[in-house]
Picture 1 (cartoon, rainbow, N blue to C red):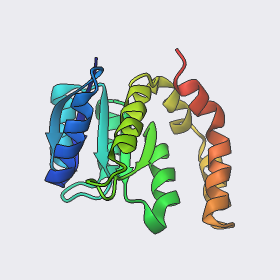
Picture 2 (picture 1 turned 90 degrees about the vertical axis):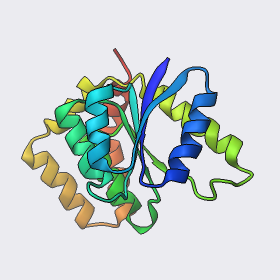
Picture 3 (picture 1 turned 45 degrees about the vertical axis):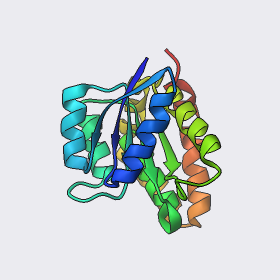
Length: 180
């Protein structure tokens, strides 16, 4: 059984996601939080297998919360974001801080696409629960020169190109992330 926590400032999103996830016999929601600070406290206390974390929240946003989680009690985290214009920046930062996945926050939560959306989220959570977080330390161990090279590449080209460069740099890391 995959035990997980949901951190989102929207009561509707927390309820809908909890209902979706609790329908999956392999997933159980053990806690929810309304902001990053509360989420961090619950992750420390409940020790879920996976955290589904909204990016835009009051008190402590998702990326800052992710950074604290990975430093204080490493746990597979899926960042959920509306993405939009800052999609690449959010994604790059989330992976840099240790997220195992970044997904677009469901819009039209009561839409006809709900069954497909629900299956996709459950599948991502099942996959994230198998993450080997020790391999994420490789990226954190990148030298300042490597980090600067990635940042320079980002600023010298389009965001999409920088994202592809960064993704290629992470290719082996992500493959090994789910190995034992």
